[in-house]
Length: 160
Image (tube, one colour):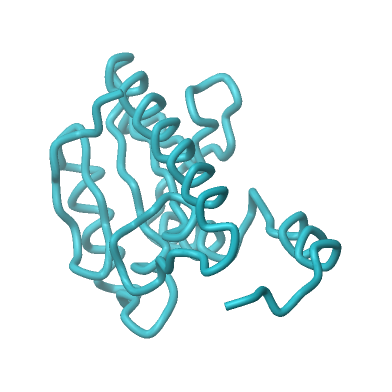
């Protein structure tokens, strides 16, 4: 299927996609604030420029867009045009994520990835469910966890 936009319009649309203070980051910030958690955002001194840094618990939280970070969920679709280009780009994002998370874990940080599908869309988790999972992990969780539409789980941390 051909792209519905010409290359100039598509390029303009792609440049307009925000890289910080996105809707999913704003929702996670509201949830952390409602829990009374103090956090910093976008710390460039840390690997991966984490979306949220919770110093009190020595925790890092990333909000990952399901398309850009290749999550196996209903929000990820393989692009119909320039497929090789996009899969290479997304693959490099995934490799960078692995490297950054491995480095942070090696530096003694605890890391959580909150996937976009948990925060928006028809299968998203509601605020009380997200707050409960965030609070459990911040206070008692392990070194690495993810939240998606299935809830919280602790897969093996990615290896760079």
